[in-house]
Amino acid sequence: MSTAAPAPVGTSRRGLVLVAVAIVLTGFNLRTAVNGVGPVLQEIERGLGISSGAAGLITTMPLLCFAVIGFAGPPLAARFRDGHVLAGALLVMAVGLLGRAVAPSFWLFLLGTVATMVGGALGNVLLPGIVKHWFPHRTGLLVGAYSTTMAVGGAVASVSTAPIAASVGADGWRWALGVWAVFAVLAVVPWLLVPRRATTGGAPAGAVRLRLLVRSSLAWQLAVFFGLQAMQAYVIVGWTAQYLRDEGMSAAAAGVLVGINALIVIPLNALVPSGAVRQSWQRPMLVGFMACYLVGWTGLLLSPLTLTWLWMSMLGIGMGTFAMVLSLLGLRARTPETVNALSTVVQGWGYSIAAVGPLLVGLLRGLTGGYTGMFVLVYAGVAGLFVTGWLVCADRQVDDEVPALAATSPAAGQPEVETAGVESPVVVDTTPR
Image (cartoon, rainbow, N blue to C red; front, top):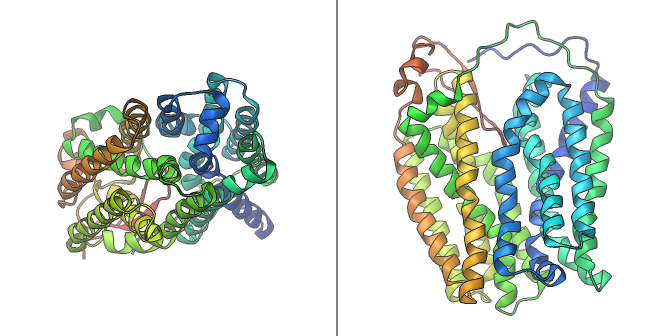
């Protein structure tokens, strides 16, 4: 087994509890702004007087922000206290949530959306490192805690946004989107009280130059796999509620079903990594996830108002590809530095690829007046997921494809613990058995 990093010195139990509370509250806020849009997308279109294509741009903005803003996290954390960076990001998020709630025009709404995504993007990047630093012996517990609250926050937003809008009446969608600013502000408070980081006394590790990974075919395959699974997730979050409403379902019921989809992800995030680290299980798991996607999308296509809970549940199980790809990131590189670099570029490139999906759904819906384009897109995405997933399940590492990386890899038999993902990380012991 690998030796865990020593705990930060000079930190009281009360200080650690405060850090844990801050982490969990931040996790709750990471998806509220994203999941709250889909259930009231129709009201946003009417309120701002925008086309379906413009609505598609709104649903794709989180992905673009995750791809671009996330890269600013490490430099900011190196210059300032990461707790203060997160506090500032959450304040910007709150301002963005309020700003788009009162925005009189589409472009101001879009600007508010960008500000709103600052908290989510920087939270994705910084929380794993914060957990690893403050809780080296309880990393799994804290990762599970904030991953769970992230899913709960997304589910609560999906379920409650439409009822809040309906209860307010005219322009209720503005209140329904702005109310989440309260939770962002609440999450700021503990970060301002968190003590300064104590050092562990270890020497800093060298960084891997990101551009080296451009030469790795495995890195590109992982990026496409990550991007296609993210595209599926954000089409589900951004457009299935509106699709069900256009088929005759109430806004509240559609939101509840998207919330069910979000809740199913919680146990998957806990269970999938333990199977994905087993080489012999990876491809069977991939086939199972693809089958769930196909059943879910086909059910929504052929019978959207019958057994809808089942179709949305199957899509939720299919979204286990997210936890799977995070696990694979920890297995496809040999050193922690390479894993971090691989995770950064895969998610940066991947979110850029995924951003095309929700935007295309909106554009095609506007051009055709229906959702045929959405189903063609998601079916093609499932096919791409299967092909790239099959390739990345082969037992190999990016270090072997890029000589400059291989030169820094540890000797065979050296134990290491990899932290995969700038989202919910997966800790993997890669010691040969």
